[in-house]
Length: 247
Image (cartoon, rainbow, N blue to C red; front, top):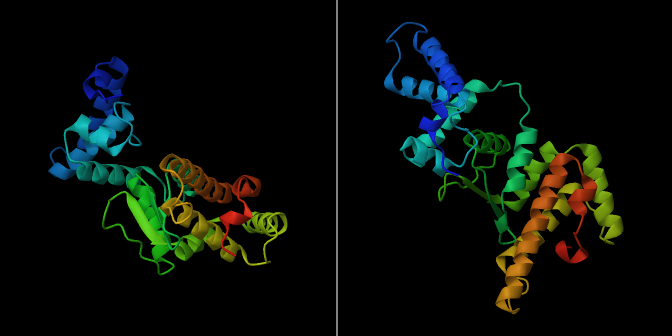
């Protein structure tokens, strides 16, 4: 559904919120003291406060509504997110929600996944860089590509120890696998599922069967990652078979 800013501001309650927020911001610290870019950011934040736009809406939809480029929208959203959220907020739940909606692709050695929220993308990138990993984002502003072992390091930092042990027990005992560390098992799962998504497994099957297998495997990948981050070991390992793990 298209975003209609004029219609939203046509409602008296929304218009009043926008006007109050804009006047308050524009007069601080003094009338005419803001640059054009600061006024743009102010108007954007006022539109959010008035309920005229949703900052979590797809970038393309916001770009069409504001009649600007997607790059400019990402900058506006990122600035709004940085100014409206406390540095003390734990973004784990937001990372989980974002990864739950994305689709992973891989080749058995690397993973590619999308994160549309500029702040979350920067948060994930910063966490990786602190570990010495610099993901490739050169081909898209919303996609991250990194080695599977680097992504597992990222998961290892976020997943609690209890969940790691539960996942390890489920995979080792239930799948009759060698007793290995959580990171080794997670790398084996994501690597094998990545190979399947890439078509290295089942390449001789009929085209429609390959699509079905790919979809199922992609869902397993998302379920595994999201289950780990949510502390749901049962959900993470659900549907994972011995054939889904590199041994």
